[in-house]
Image (cartoon, rainbow over all chains, first blue to last red; front, side, top):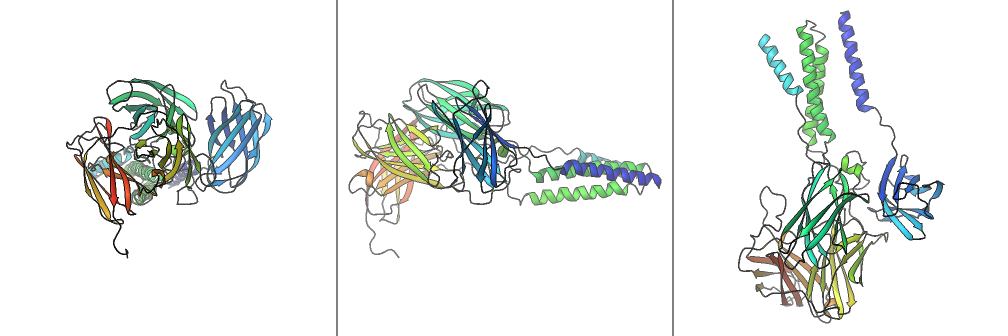
Length: 134
Length: 448
């Protein structure tokens, strides 16, 4: 009887472990996307994209992988499926090759396209990055 | 008793070793066939089905009669970074010219076809092998049931009769999960396929089930605005009607990204397939033998469904003397009055036609012509379909030269008057164009 109890307890612990592994909430990973033009590589990162104001982090590098310094970086959100475009947000420099477009309004859940325009003396480079808002 | 135990163990082992069958992909990889008018070459680029990844991608470039020999550079890139390159040497004889490239993973990819002057880019999606959660639950449930069955047998054999009830209960629970998932999974609709309905990303191609469902079930997108200009090549600028952004989500439909019809003032037809050189930027080489206003009609399909016909006109100066070749083939006409179906059958004589753009024949219609051809109100593009081959979802490619000889088209001319009609079919890797003029009588009395 005692052994049965021990066995039952062990089975319950095993079951609990299996369920915990299966249903443990995944850690919040930031949404990221990357795209390149001939002159720049842009890496976008948004922690927990939600409908409403979002803070979009951008890492801009040159073809050698070093931080790039375009004169102006703007973020242009569009929801292609709905045909909605929202006002562009100018990103502020945070550090070498690092920019942030704070309070970018993405008012709806769904698939967004974030066009990042990088302006410098040579012209404008544009990359289009996907962002899924939950 | 012993026999019973052996049988039970065998069943348990059979269950326990059930292997997940190779899953049905969320998107079935079919060949991507894209017609491309690259400079003076009319090519068909065939991207053979891609799986498993990472792995090779076979690309074939089909040349047609009159295609200049030469070399093309092919490049596969993802997110703007080139992953694989190959060269294709185009011989003087029309046919298939292959190359093998490599993809490093699933997601959206771009194939660049570079002839040294122009670079055409073809976006396509490399699918991932995807298991649905229901499949996982079914397989996992059966595996768990098998393992628990073994456990309960072992416990029972060692004489702990009551304790064996605990894993036995688990067997029942696991079986219930597996059977429920297996039975219900057939009726659960698959997620919207990235590429066709959703903008493809590496994430949603790799796991279409993880992406949150969009707040709508209507995936269709706004209409497209077309501007035609000439800058050496004929340049088509496509922008979204609602946002003004470049339209960069065209799908391959009827084996091309854009089917472009251009009609000269005297009624010559060009049926071309502009190449994508950038987002919303399509170009095609066009040598014009006449000065005047040309009719331009582009057929496209945007991601999310629905095809669109974009029409405009452009005034062009003569740049040369070369005009598209035509030939004379017997046309059997059964022309009904406006509003009723007419049938035009082209008799090509021998059954050796090759499918062009997935169809045995194409008929382009414009009219009624009263003044300038460019002002004709009606534009039509009629197909004569290849009969489907049972069990082969793919359409035959141009290597099958066995269609015809009669190519019928049925079309209801909406208005009475004089129409310009061109029947097109491919033979010997050469597109044959048969021009005709059709007079459509007015319907007698009112149509009720």
